[in-house]
Amino acid sequence: MAQVTLKNNPVHTSGELPQINANAIDFVLVNTDLAEKKLEDYKGKKVVLNIFPSVDTATCAMSVRHFNQDAAKFDNTVVLCISRDLPFAQARFCGAEGIKNVEMLSDFREGKFGKEYGVLFTDGPLKGLLSRAVVVIDENGKVVYTEQVAETTNEPNYDKALEALK
Image (tube, rainbow, N blue to C red; front, side, top):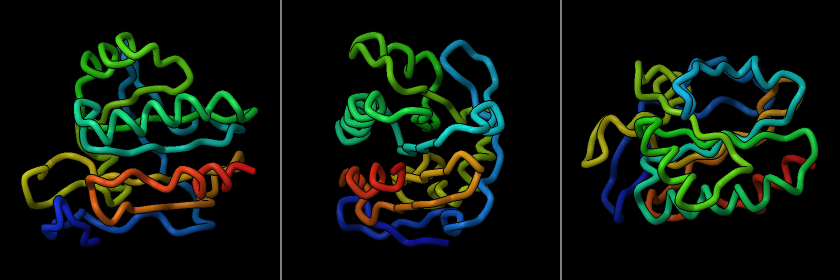
């Protein structure tokens, strides 16, 4: 269990992020077309998991915009923006913002992703949502970078995450 903060108040997650050099944990999430997507669907690509509580908050929306802008700069790379938002809300956001370089995925059905990646809030006002984190996976399915953002209202370290793609 990790402890992070939300507006400087301690909150906890369901576990720890995957270890560096570990095989990334497969998942089944839902895209904005309501189709199921698995990690294995991206085999052979570098994958950035941009994980956050809700696209309807300023910091989460900023992370999607930031990765959308930067994702286009990297070959053989996909950015998956993951929350428990309904796919309809994710699609609405992307349409309104002109987001086209990232894929939105939802953990709304089972919440299994949040538990397995250790990012499900277990207490506090956001209990049941996902904490802000970034996981970078190489083209061989190995975890090469992780960041559990210590203060939920802060943005992740984009530069370090993107450096892991090189």
